[in-house]
Length: 407
Image (cartoon, rainbow, N blue to C red):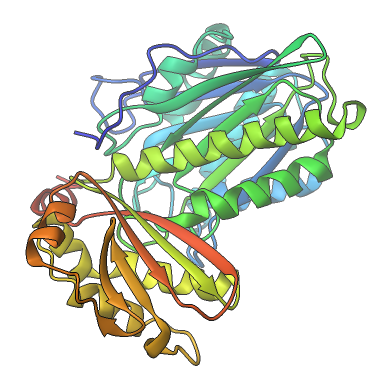
């Protein structure tokens, strides 16, 4: 079960967005929805970030191409159960055929359709199962279908991950709703497995992309389950403008409120992935502070978050803090002065200026390790920069899930 996470009881519609989901039997044998369509109103802005994996999936390539060619994106189509990755030219053809069918059914341009896939890598996508259901997908479009869509994009997730927020700007309500999926193969290096966030404020394309890039740095680019970057990672941010609130026409205070709304939504969705990580029993925050640069701090945080020895100790609730010290020391950074480093496990000081803390006892360390939510704080004492990474433990269940993934 997810660590201290309960799925939303309801989700708010976003003006200018309609969704539909159905069971296309792509992999899940008629026991769940696995195909989703998102319709975006005309005139909306759409920004995206994608995986940096060199073996990026066919739909990622198509998305990048279509975004470069089309001013307005109108439809997103998402399938679960098959990643359409490692599928060569046949996979590219499948993704384009799906886009073409949706464009034909809706009377829109081919390049205005973006495809997304998640699931097993290296198997050809049965595109005909999707093409055959496009007419029904379009007929079922409705603004209130966020909940069903959030469930339909899941793979090894144990629960849907989605949320809604609102804010009042000049007497008008701005609504944001977002959903994500991902539980394993998580170290995004851009975004996450799949995530879709829509807001009904008006934000021009270039500004939307800038806001998204900034939000990703503090959210989806600050998580790790197993240090593996997926072939299919994608995060899309949509701004429809249909609330009547435009970012260019509000005060600086209100502008910051809207941007903050996007950032907080991305952070909560990213944390939800870690809370529902495959086999997770711990939610762990790695904070690195007083570093020379943010990137320096992030490298050290990731070094701890990626360590199998640290993660298995977390699962065992074993206060073997030598593993933390080891993981800090192996970080790929230059001129790490270990004589200045102080290290905490929760509120318990482990290391002070490179020396074991006199106040530390095994009982204090055990009390911290027994918690479901654990914070590791690393103070380098050499600068003012900081960074954080959220991660999970590594359990027997993680191995079981991934050993059985294709069976």
